[in-house]
Image (cartoon, rainbow, N blue to C red; front, side, top):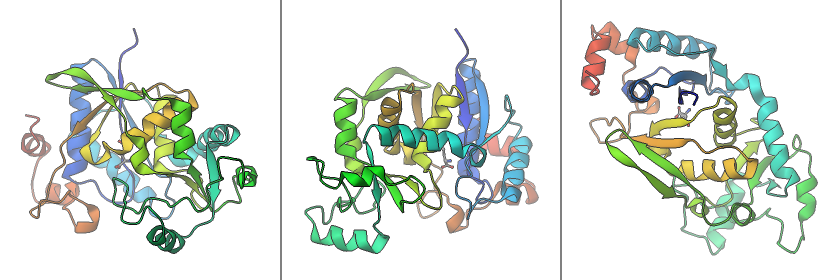
Length: 289
Ligand code: GLU
């Protein structure tokens, strides 16, 4: 049997902080425990926010922490054709549709619809379905819009769930507990965006395609991505890709009890290093003595 494959997948839109360090170290620890390989993937599909300088800094911070990766780095921006091909498969199955709504269109249609007040697990208003083709086929010309010319592409969640069937789920593996089966509840996300005109893929689509192409068998990620995993399982089923096992770790919180974030000025690992903190201190502080 081939060894398990893990990955750490940061986005190069800022410096790494302790939250990233925890995720990377937990992947390293689990890969060691299960005799697996550990890959590094740079999630740089957002051309506006990603910077080569941040990528270089991420690689040097991980090196400073003493984490070693197997194989070459996969950079998502170099694989847009893979995501395009996956989107085309979904389009061919009539499972996505072109959406022309702006954010303000969505807010006003949502406020006037039966979904008013209902949000997805990330707190965004549920898409009210303005551009969704009707089940009787009315509006289905939207399925023929060229992938390049639509403003955005959305998954038709009701059709997707019909195609996937009722038993979708994933195996949860934790360090100190027996494996458990987690059924997914993707309907609470509504018709999620899978691609936009200027970023012709999305976090959800590219993460699913890459995990499969890189042979990832075990995904260790923060609890903030637990609900999004339900979307990933649906996409894996629709695209005929294997579902990895998943593990979710607690988040590192700041003094206000909020998740560390670049936008709230969480100190970068580089700042800690400059203040004289060592990689051993970071490992100890995060529980990896
Ligand atoms: N790139 C994502 C992030 O930095 C994490 C990737 C994942 O675990 O799917 O939050």
